[in-house]
Image (tube, rainbow, N blue to C red; front, side, top):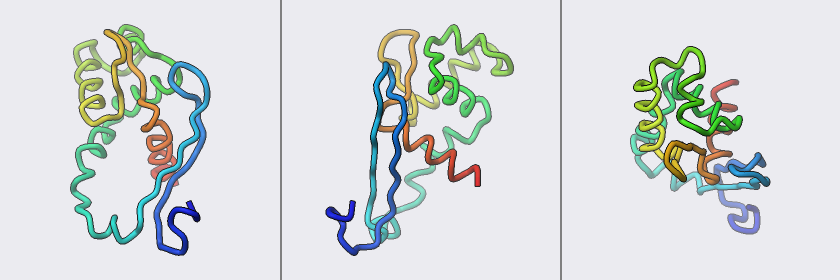
Length: 125
């Protein structure tokens, strides 16, 4: 990142995590601080609000842990009816936090894994 941004003020996140389907992700992303401050923070509302529900967070956590079928997700305790689970999966998918690579299966896209974990880390402290 130093090579890319030099001495410019920058906000970044980086990490490693298991990749959907196996392997490892190594991810880093950053933007100049000025670009973030000049942008509209409200543009992040849809993605953030998709995570602002305990059931959607539990679903994202379960998918990251390897539960990948809609049926298995709907069977998890405390997440509501299968219709409610599908609604929440749709919300997470619309916001880019989940995708369905094939019918009835879910994963966190590789470029969102570290971002999701970083948000949880930030919110935990």
